[in-house]
Image 1 (cartoon, protein in one colour):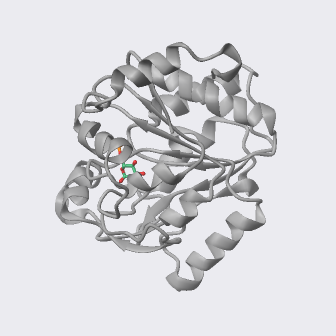
Image 2 (spheres, helix red, strand yellow):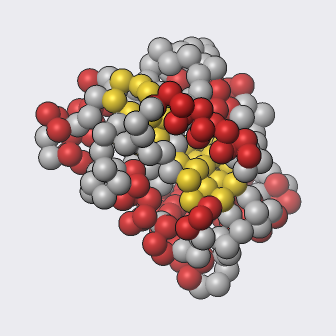
Image 3 (spheres, helix red, strand yellow):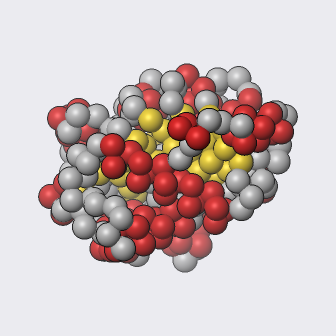
Length: 260
Ligand code: GLP
């Protein structure tokens, strides 16, 4: 694992954008997995600027998104469809036909999830998967107790996660109970993982994910088994890491050719 602690969320997001840009420049037909939530917003803003200034070309890129609410229409403002279009896809030169997003309105969810997995494989697998993290350690919507080998499937949200989402839906009673999410096994097949976390309320989940035991109770801890997982954190999210000063020293002393 590579743990990079930046002075703040702004510089962390700029670094993350450089990493994403590097992947696309090295492989113009890269397959990228995108996450939603507040955390990656600044990263997406940086990618938009790079693209609009002519320094990043998404024309060959294929994308998959991690998850979606079941039963929510694509134009619902809290849907991940709306989020991705509003915060990224409308503003970059990514061809519509190469955008793949989970359809929360699929009729036959089981066969739809199988098709989504097949589409990822047919595209050649995900080169870089961007992730945030829930306060309970979830990635995508793989809540605690998710199988560490799980595939794309329907999941039920925990009360904690529904509470965190209440503002997006104008009240807890409107938050869906069910979602479709890529599984932990699906995420682990990505060639590289970039997890972003900012703020004190992520510190415990980050410490358990990076330095705790690998356990289904902290789904992000499975990333300890990934050969190329990069965590980019601000100081608050890193504040419960016991080896924080070691991670900082390692990054500060990296050879230039290894930096993003
Ligand atoms: C949701 C999403 C996750 C995201 C998490 C954290 O649960 N399914 O992909 O990482 O929220 O969101 P935020 O970045 O807003 O804290």
